[in-house]
Image 1 (cartoon, rainbow, N blue to C red):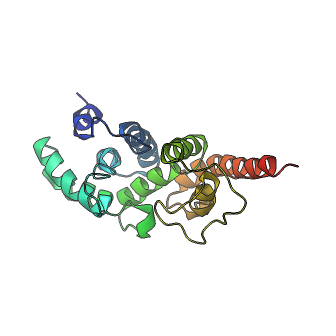
Image 2: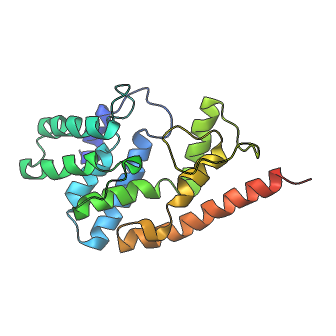
Image 3: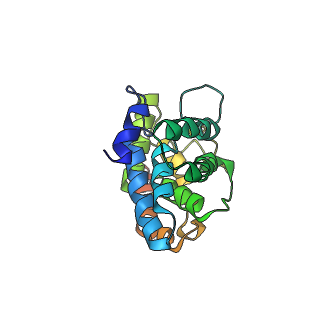
Length: 205
């Protein structure tokens, strides 16, 4: 059994929205690709990518990255993950969160943050955002609602505002690694085009 299968039972069975196990797997695949290309510790990156959101939605008012770091320590101990690598994984999970504005100091943590942020731009990011906003009853776009100057978790009032407030601020040159910068280019361009087309079509008269 691979590490992805071993970690899966720790995810909430009824976890919904855009941060479930499927998201963790996509971040895992991105992180694995980046780690190989950047010469990082692949095992640390893989596991940290799988566990980066493990604490999300479990305790109201508690930072999911901090809780996830604590949970990762316990989970990896149970799974008999190499003890000398556990602190590195825990650090990656603790500092991955976009809204905290943390600049990681290790290559592995930079890669985990890059992989997670790549999930915020591109086709899948758009679908994830729309799906979550539909569940919350948010409109696609409303020209009378101005986007916020700064992103605040859960603070967007329309789907397009979310993409403007968060996704379009993740320009390719803001990523840490060369590999992620390259991967971000097409995803960013698609997101930019989508926002522009939606606004243009809905403003048509």
